[in-house]
Image 1 (cartoon, rainbow, N blue to C red):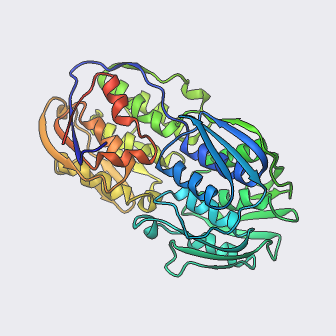
Image 2 (image 1 turned 180 degrees about the horizontal axis):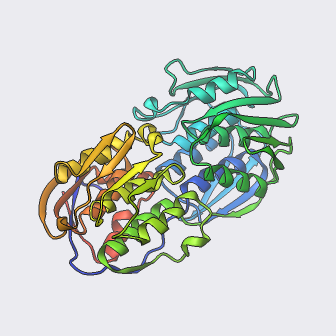
Length: 418
């Protein structure tokens, strides 16, 4: 995407066709790390090739892992069982998964590692993970509470149990779980309190770990025991991205069409797939939507809610404030630029004052995406029913779905670039 803006022309007809969403970002970055930590060659098929996964692959290469890309959806990863200190700081853009997962994994490396990102990543919190690693005797510093993170690793932890506050992100738990299998003794992770970001992502982590030879048990609902197995190279297939699927599901129901994505909603293992039931209820979506366990799907549903028959309140979404941008603020700002009063923030809740009469109107609006791929992709849905919706910085979709605009075009949506 070379242009700095794209305007969507409402198709005026149902969108029908087949679109194959890209591979799951969440699973791809987990599999890349585990393959990099394993001895031998792993073949990852169905993988996502995007900014976030490219940053992970490049970081692994910088630490001595061979990562080949024989085609558009495959990584062939050959590791030696260790990640060597890189010659320069690891630059991970705004990839939260890569940044947090590597921070924990490198704490069991040997030598100095610096994990850094772009201006947006430098505003995303990592302090709970850093504090947990410090409690394990790791020499690690993140002065701002966000990246950059400097790690002076000695190859082991000084303790075999950690308590982690996962209220801000489940990625902290996933990061520790994946690292722990590379330790020298069985390791236990316990949650501090019951709050945790989308718990379904923990299930993704454990499934990937087990596929690469890890042994994990769960003594209590808030603790995990990881055996010191290390990882074994394997062939691993990655399912399509459920978060990406939400835009296609929403485009279909919004236009009264049918988009075949090649995978049934019930066949996904990613937590965002549970958004399908909410989207399928359109235009009679529930009055309250709890987004705690499908956080990345909330921008999709929030924009769809603008056209619902009745208002929708989104709860359990406080963590959206610390994503690639403050997504609650970005959603309310974007919706209110379409029509003032369309959205209201109440604390960390978002209320969308639905109005089916928006359909067919000309409501010129330039949507500030805040460099957030999900804001760009979700507000494109508004342009399917409202004239003169323009998305700024449309290229930011490359973070997880580089082919998004092409996918819409393949369904017959006309896009005006520039």
